[in-house]
Length: 125
Image 1: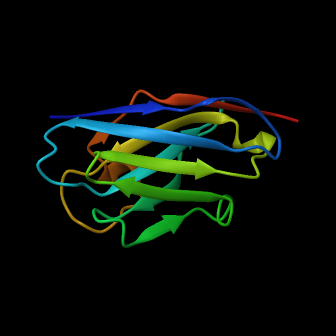
Image 2 (image 1 turned 180 degrees about the horizontal axis):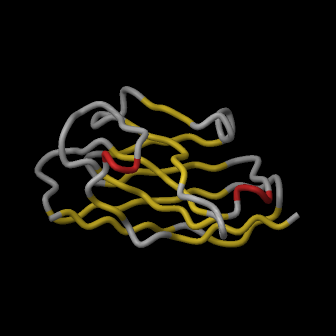
């Protein structure tokens, strides 16, 4: 089993920045493709960014490209989402996810096997 724990969420003004962290524990003998998703009230969960097992390849949703950066430190078993130029529409619960198989990145939630509990990000206008 793999456990994921997000941290770093909070309340920030529009234009501000936050960095989310996702700590992995459990079966950490290998590194997994990981992704960050978010879900706003009344909306479906959507992918924000994804990263391959070694960090060499990344993908971003158009809505966050140029503002968010996904990264990982496999020595610390931790993935990050640096969020800058935040907008009120970025308000959501943010989840990290890990895929048990594969090495590249995935952009469908169904490709991920493990999920964190989520961390709230609120951007005020």
